[in-house]
Image (cartoon, rainbow, N blue to C red; front, side, top):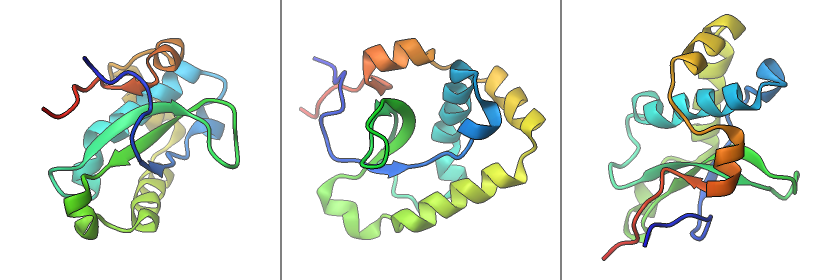
Length: 131
């Protein structure tokens, strides 16, 4: 059975593009998917065993659902995962270096679920639990 809801611990990684791409929720999700797919090129020291998911979740600061990246690291590699602040700052710096037009172009060229589909899935991509 595939995992379809947020049911494991994540380090949340903000992709600060919402204000720049609002009100196009689908475009925001597609840009976040681009970052998800390319996070290892932005943070090369990220252990290969980590999984990066696109999730529809609330946070302590915003209980409404919104798209956000979630980094899952198996317990045995936690000590090798870069600090959450390093992850956030790397993504933030990448976003800040991109023009709004470049972000829109990347989003339009990236295949991703719509915001409505992501809310229904809870987590993307769907993953099978470990055997």
